[in-house]
Image (cartoon, one colour):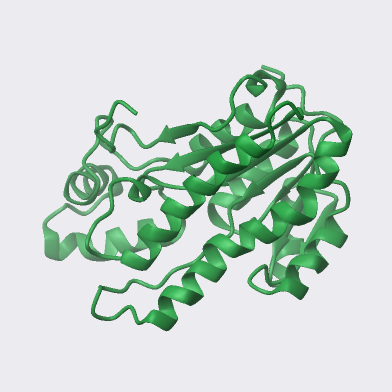
Length: 259
């Protein structure tokens, strides 16, 4: 299926590894001119070369200067995928107010900076896409990672507010909300835990047990980066013209809700 992205320029923040890399790869395969973003220049350029992207943007989006540099290096962007983010595995007791503030800066304000830099151009051209990578913890938070849960909720909220702001402009704003996704670091963690949890010795036996223990869902496994990338590509394409202010959950049915 041709998603008609040829001629569109897309910036995927945090695309020098993991989920962001998968999104950037699929957009490039669908014909978009992709800008790969990261903070480490060597790693970012290596990913760009691997997926056939022609442009990179290097900078820390948690600072005004870094975001401005990335926006300048990216040029006119039609599709902005706000994927970059980070968090520490902390409990309520461990997460200090300073850690809450830092996580909000990285996961929320960084997206706001890129929106402010790049959306005005989309409005002028009469077409654009802003896609936040959110998550089910935004609406179904757990006790662990309270600082991260809250930033996901903010990402979802700002996307809907932005959709209202962009009424009648030709620019849409949406959220893709992944479940637990099998990136290399997650697979290593689960494989290391398998012996003490009795999950088995091969990945074929480990995965369904780990999914049941950590993220019970209707599919019985972890999601793949390519499945999230597919949802992003759909929203980025002209087939998503009539979708704005929406959350597209790609979580195997982890979130038990009708909305």
